[in-house]
Length: 288
Image (cartoon, rainbow, N blue to C red; front, side, top):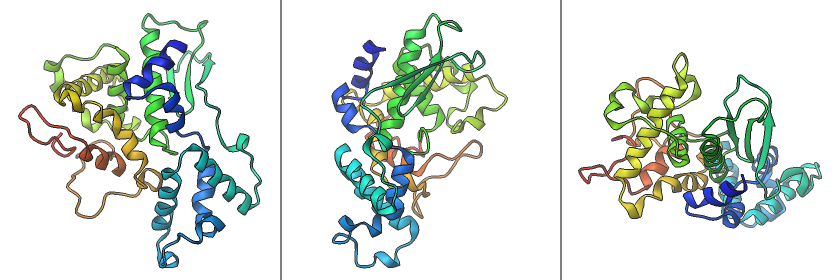
């Protein structure tokens, strides 16, 4: 774990110290309370737009998110504690924030997957239950997914489509992926949510998720490959990562006929990146 904690941030173009300063470390209940009460906070009064009272609830929430996410961790903590005091909760920093550590939990549930990721850390099966041959790669995969969620600052779980989250983590973790000539066996982009995998072999699907991400990784120009990992940072700055509002009217995107719907924050973040196909055409999410 100690070795991987130093190595995995480099995949996202950062290091452990910078990752700690960039990742989400505030609990959802405290963020929700800040967003709900932002318009009434003393510190906000001088900066509220003149039409604030006429704004919709989504617009108010988006404004609060912009203020929250534009600060560093120290400023975010200051804001949520101010909101706590305003609402009469009196929370302390220890009540609402997480230490600069990766939490590692061991469980003895043999029916669960070997590793699961959360924005604060990972949970894996105790050695008394299982030690798979590729445990090192699986831990790496779990830490990549932890970073996906924590760097996006999502309070709704991992905001990436399932295929992208699993594919990026699997490929980056050094695990086996399907061969490119097998790509017609699975329509990868239709697997957005866990429900989309119902009745199918998840291990088989993960091989194809990894193959799809490897294709993207090898298609993007070498100097632009970090854009595939920067997507979560772009998503964090989009208020829809919090409000879960849909795409703007007229946005060039048609959802697939099957499978779940990608988040608006992911779609817009993808389209902001410099991703081209093998014919050097812009590979936006719709084209993909």
